[in-house]
Image (cartoon, rainbow, N blue to C red; front, side, top):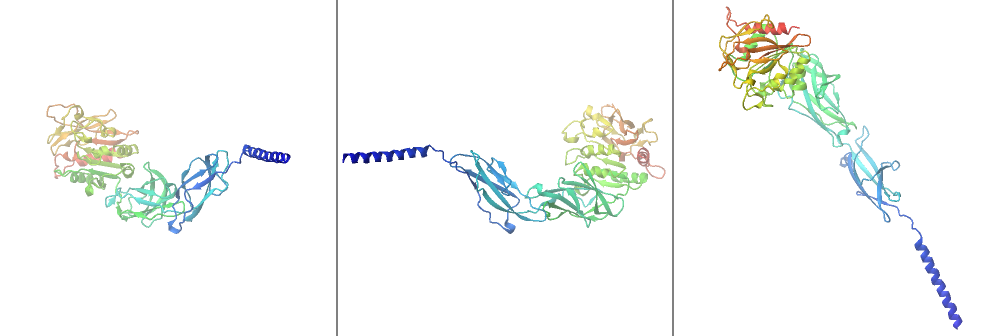
Amino acid sequence: MIKTATTFSRMLFCVLLSFVLLSCEKEGQLKPNSEPVTNLYLSSINRSGTDRLNAIVDMKWSGDDKDGYITGYEISFDNINWTYTENQDSVFRFSINNGSDTTDINFYVRAIDNEGNKDKTPAYLKIPIKNTAPTISLDDNLIKGDSVYSVFSLLWTANDLDGIGTLDSVYIKINNGAWFAISKNFSFASIVPDQPEVNGLTNASVYAGSSSINLNRKITGLVVGASNIIYIKAKDLSGTESEMDSLNPFVLRRKTSDLLVLDAFNISTTPNADVVYASALSAAYGAYDYYDFYRQNKAYIPKLWKPTFLLTLGLYDKVFMYSDNSRSATAGGMLFEEGSTTFQDYLNNGGKLLITSDFDNNAQGSTAGPFPKTSSLFQFTPADSFQTFFAANQKASLPLDSLVVPDAVNAVGYPTLKVSTFSDAIDPFFPKSSAFVVYRGQVKRANGVTNTRVLCAKTLNVNSQTNQIFFSSDLYKLQGDADANGQQDELRKFFEKVLLGEFGW
């Protein structure tokens, strides 16, 4: 009996020992690494027809790993080609093939753990998208009047909910002409007719951007001397077009002369400055084009001096601008000052400029003191500075019947001008060293200061030809005595000498 019990005990001990050893062996073995699991925040997008998403989609994802951690992800749109990322979200801008407005995007993402294992069953989502039509609108502030003077500019804003990069082109049409394509990189263009002096249909050049890049292609449909309507539309890469936008009709004025007269006179005078200049100019030169800045409640003060107004000036061989001392509401300075770089560019491009005006001591927004030497007026005119810069309240006057006398050397052939209307608050100036004095006046000052009597000077271009004449007082007050026929011819003779003589090259 004792033997039997001992034998049983020995057998039980061996079984237990084997179990313990077997258990120890299993626990000592390395378990295989589990694969990571990838999750998308959306399991499906159930949209169709017009309810589809637009081409910009925001996607989010995450990953889990039971025995490690996630180090990154791979993304694919075909389950073959993969792109690595450590991000867990991204905004995708999908493209749609030309000629189609809908498509389905297959999106796959798989997590990668710290052992380099990748999810063998990537998360998947089918994304239904549709193309959104682009939008475009014209700025109606550039053309405010009922007519334009030969040149006009267009400004537009184009957009696309699918992303501005999905735009393909912008198209402009004038009246019944053909659509004209412009790169999506531009949002501004100027139109210059090929034959602005002839009424009727004409082709036109298109200058894109603020730097006036000539596209060297012609837009059709423009009508000189008649009403015009501008249309615009945009097209995206899929071929979808925006709705059209348009501007109110406007008349494109015919160019009638190579002389452009710029009227910046905004006060009532006796005699009427406009009437005096019109009579003298017509007698001296004949036809000219007339541009009134203040017409239609100042609608013709340039919204863009460059390039629009510069392109307009470029159509004319000669420009005569007369002004009072009014300051513009847009920038606080005189129009001469606002357009100073435009006038300088016009001169640099071969233009010929005649200016006459009186000047406000408080120009450029100064609340007191003389006309500042820093004014941009002195950058492009023959004047270096006014006497008033050196002595406040030193405006001069030209008494009735006093003379404005031509320089004996620089102004041969110019008529002597006689004051027909008392002129106060005028500005004799100091000419630049490069300028040539044309007229000096019999000016008077309250305290007798007469440092300079120069009222008119001229500049020459690189070919020694007169390209600018600047008068710092009102010419319409210098009509002089009437002749035997009751005509006052001094101004006519002056305009003949300048426009036909000095500017005759």
